[in-house]
Length: 161
Image (cartoon, rainbow, N blue to C red; front, side):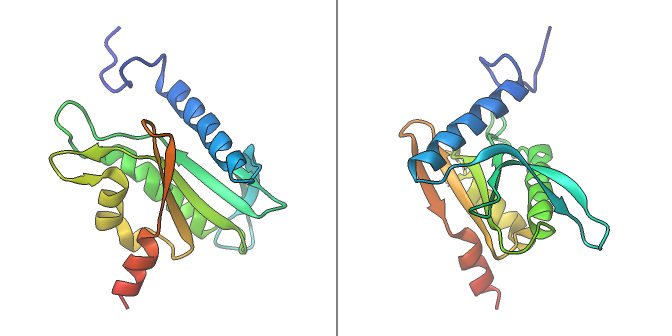
């Protein structure tokens, strides 16, 4: 069956996401941060809250993480616009999450050679107005297996003041 929107070499996009969450769990554990999958917390803008399952989190350490394993659209390095709307949704959930939680967007580091920027850099440049000040963006490099903790939002919010 032809599946043009599925990651090449993967069983399904759901498997790619689950595998990436497992990588994130290992990365955080190596930093002494033990998280669990599907941490459910009440979210909402009014008193009537509803539970939302964050990809990873820890109530004791007050950390919530959303993981996004998206890449520039192949073969032409196009912007994955529909996927970035999911990043916007994550920003909204971070905004309406309980106060006092450390909020991390953990993303795959994917560089566009033609643009000379990562997908996260592009996201911050074009959607920075939607990123709450307390959200950290961490990029995971699959090749080096290292994390680049970016402070895109801090720089962005400082520049807009």
